Length: 313
Image 1 (cartoon, one colour):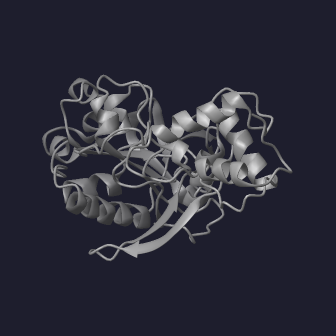
Image 2: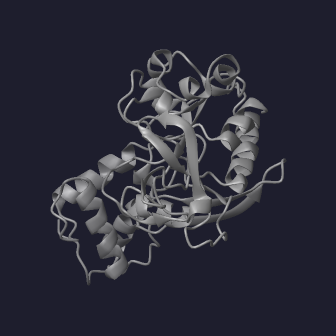
């Protein structure tokens, strides 16, 4: 078998169908790029030519999806429009390619929400686009909440983007004590630079970009090695609150009063946001943050607006 750029007909339509492309039967640039992307992610020679090995890999990948979900691996986010929750929160659906999240398992029951920050820029659409084009595999969170840029642009502040359907999951925690947490949790990212360092009177992020002073939070003591953090905006926190309420409605097994909200009522906020062995082992559900299950992470930090929102859910 050898199907390549310039070919046309039913065999090309089949390949386009396997890749989730428009089945026009013409093997052009878009089809070639989609084939190359598929090949790269599966360790094949990325020549854009569908030979026997590439075709077999496409068939194997398609057979993993048992519920009829179409394959979409064209490298372009799939715009599914905007919907409004019962709480009045607008959520944009911009879906990743189907090989960017796990679709080859039966529906999972979600019982935990994990909050992260991206350690990146403010635009959630660009964040998700980068996930779609990277080579890390199925690493993503289901939601991303935009922030205010370091230049003061608040266009995306509090904007919520959903990047794959409820019944699936992606790897967002790394190595933790229980695989259950990956398959049964919902990940949410806040667009935020994370920890900062001070140099003279100025503050910089980990890639030496200067952060405006009004976007800097100084904690009362160091959290995971750092005093200074990029501030979570009030709009982000409000959108996070409304999203949590929506997820509770859709996933009644998530008890939003357990996990961090419960710990914050009984212990110092720095301890509550710190590593918890029981959380690492998958024995705590509800709402958690990455730092609860990983000692090497700083997302999220115990900032006042986030703490108060969680306590008052």
